[in-house]
Image 1 (cartoon, one colour):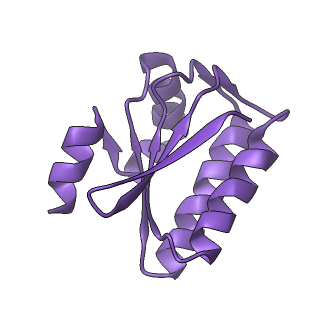
Image 2 (image 1 turned 90 degrees about the vertical axis):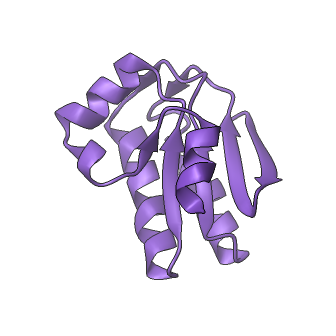
Amino acid sequence: MNLNLEKINGCTVLFIKEERIDAHNSGELKEAVLHLIEQGEVNIIVQLEHVRFIDSSGLGALLSGYKNAAAKSGKLALANMQQQVLSMFELTRLNRVFDIYADLNEAFDSET
């Protein structure tokens, strides 16, 4: 899975450079997020600008990260979600669980 990390405004931003998060690569995403949390990076923003499709395993990987960050008094938020991906979050009502931001600036503004 093509992932990039940047530390911006005290948050770890995980840029996903894939068009799909599905059964083929969601395990890698889950492991990457858990590794970040184990390293003490508990405030994570996942940047989903390039993701055009997500299935239940992808949703599960993000939810796992959310729960693990919360267990360490952290937060996993989502930003730059395309409409078809947002529709999956709305369909599963996970939009009520995650903080979802239009872009990174909005996400950073909410943290201050």
